[in-house]
Amino acid sequence: MQPKTTQPNLSFLQLWNLSFGFFGVQIAYALQSANISRIFATLGADPHDLSYFWILPPLMGMIVQPLVGLLSDKTWFGPVFGRRKFYLIVGAVIAVAVMVLLPNAGDFTFEQSLFLGLNAAMWFGLFSLMFLDTAINIAMQPFKMMVGDTVNEAQKGTAYAIQSALCNAGSLVGYLFPIFFTWIGIANTAPEGVVPASVKWSFYMGAAILIVCVLYTFFAVKEMNPTEYARFHGIKSTDAGTVGSSNGKSDKRVIRSFVTVGLVQFFCWAAFMYMWTYSNGAIASLCFAWDGLDTASDAFQDAGNWVGMVFAVQAVGSLLWAALLPFIEHKMGNKGAYILSLLVGAIGFASILFVHNRYVLFVSYALIGAAWAAMLALPFTIFTNAIQGSKHMGTLLGLFNCTICLPQIVAALCGGLLLRGVGTQAGMLGVAGGCLLVAAACVLLIREKE
Image (tube, rainbow, N blue to C red; front, side):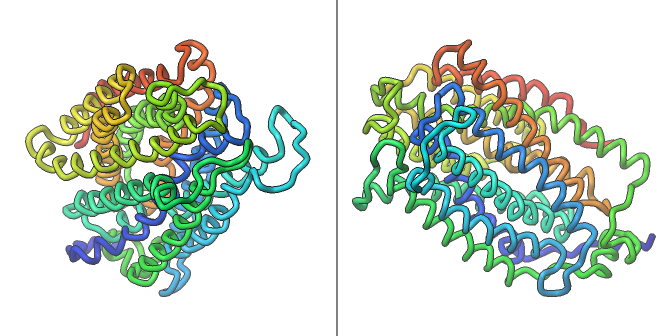
C-alpha cells in the first residue's frame, strides 16, 4: 500500500470529454426503449406477452456489465486502448451493426411458421435485440467506470450531472427521430408485419451518431496508466490491474450502500420498465381511439410516434429537474432530493390514467422526468462515494448495475400477470406510479456515512 495522492480537479472540458460518447450510446438506448414494444407488436406479438420481450435487455446487462468491470479492472491495453476504452469501442461497433439489422426483422423472407409461439421475424428480432443490448451494455459501462477512475470525490457529483445531462439529451434526440422522419415525408406505416420506414431510418441515424460520439471520447480521453492509477487510489502499483479487497469497515459501508440503494433501484426500474413496455398501447387507447387489436392501423402507429414525443418531453423535464437538483440537495440533502423526485414522478404516472388529450400527456411525462433525473445521478453519487479508493471499482460498479437489471427482469416476468389483473395497458402505468411511491419510502433506509 502506498500513500494516496489527491486527484487533481479536472477542467469542464475534461469532464465533458469523459462522458460525451454517452450521448450517442443513449440515443441507441432511447430508440430501443421507445420502439421495442412497437416493433414486436408490429411483428405480431400479443400485448400480454410484450413484457417478456423486455427480459433480454436487463438480463444481458446483468451478465455483461459486471464482466466488463471485472475484465477491465484486471487488464491494461496500453496508452491507446487503455483500461476501459477498449470495451467502449468494441461495444459501439457491435451496436452499430445490430441497429442496422433489428428494424428490418419483418422484411426478411422467412417461413412464417410458429416456434414456441413466435414467428421467424420475431425470433430474428429477439436475437437482434439480445445482441443490441449486449453491445449497448458493453459500450455504456466504461463511461461510469472512467468517472470513478479519474474524477475526485469533490467533482464526482458534477461529473455524473454532466453524464446525466448528456444522457437526457441523447434520449431526447432518439425519442424524436421517428417523428422527425415522418415529418419530412418518410412513411410511418407499412404492410402488416413490417416495421415502418420512419423507425428504420431512426435506427440508421442513431447508429451513425453513436459511432461518431464514441470515437470522439475514445480519442479525447487519456486513461491513467497502472502506476498513475495506483498513486491516485492509494494501492500497490502491482494491484492496479487486479481485483483486491478492501478493509472490513469499508466493506460494511459498501454492502450497506449496495443493499439500501439497490432496494430503491428495484422499485424505480420496475416502474420505468412498465412505462417503456406499455406506454404505446396505453396512449393509443387513451388518446388515439385504438381498438386494441390492429397494430398496423394509423391509430397504433401514430401513437407510437407520440410515445417518442412524450418520452422526449420526459427527457426535457429530466434535464430541467437535473438543473434544480443541486439546489434541492443543498436544502434537503441527497435523501430528501431523492424522495421528492420520486414522489413527483409517481404523481406523473398516476395522472396519465385521467388524460385523454395527447397534449396534456406532456405534463404527466414531464413530471416523470423528475424521477428519471434523480435515478441517473443520485444512486451513482451515493454508491461511488461509498467505494471511493477501492481496487475493484469497475467490478463493483458492474455488480451495482444488477440493481438496475434485476428489477427489470422481475417486472417483465410479472408484467403479463399484472396486466391481466389491472385489465388495461394504461392501468400498468398506475402500477408504475405505485412502484415509485414504494421506492420513495425505501430511500429512508439509506445511510450515506459511517
